[in-house]
Image 1 (tube, rainbow, N blue to C red):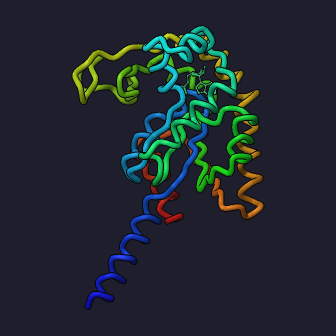
Image 2 (cartoon, rainbow, N blue to C red; image 1 turned 180 degrees about the horizontal axis):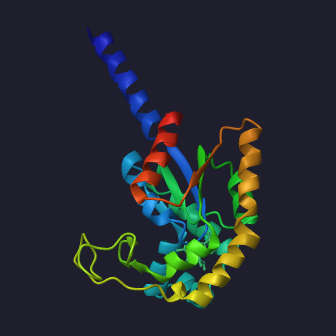
Length: 239
Ligand code: AMP
């Protein structure tokens, strides 16, 4: 009957909507594997990956006003001011492809940014923290190679491309990020400990007050597939 058909359609749209609409934050030190895992999650849930780092690098490459302001700070390993980042993110999440959810990768980085999300009542379903200690991070960053156009990352030992220094999907050359040298990595790690680490307590606090934010800790040492599986399993529990 028409009513039966309508009901089935309605149920289907509700289920589909619920399935897709997830707003997730991926936390972790630079080099913890956020970018790599973000690409899997984004494909798995069919939601866009919002990497403020990638957006800033694109702005720098295109020499936009934002890019000109951010360039030196990024090269030195310093954070870009909260106001600039918040405008960037606000504009991005109001785009059509974000209406069914999104995944933040590398944002928020400061308590100010996290509080701004809360004040603007941006719903966060899940915060996933990837834990890796500093020594491992330094080893990883020095071997990291990036495909600039897509943000795809590789590691010369742990996740090498099929062909030396060539992106698997486009055949284009890989680069080493200018801020991936050891000295800058150490500075980024210390900024991370001072400014980003407090976010763990912030989001743990939110989830314990039974607000709908779930908080998940993942051990970031191990095989990429293994870590991916742990993350996907945790996300599936929330569906
Ligand atoms: P990432 O690729 O996430 O490591 O970011 C590279 C650089 O971009 C950082 O070292 C910062 O200079 C800048 N950046 C990226 N995301 C943020 C953010 N949420 N807040 C401030 N600065 C950021």
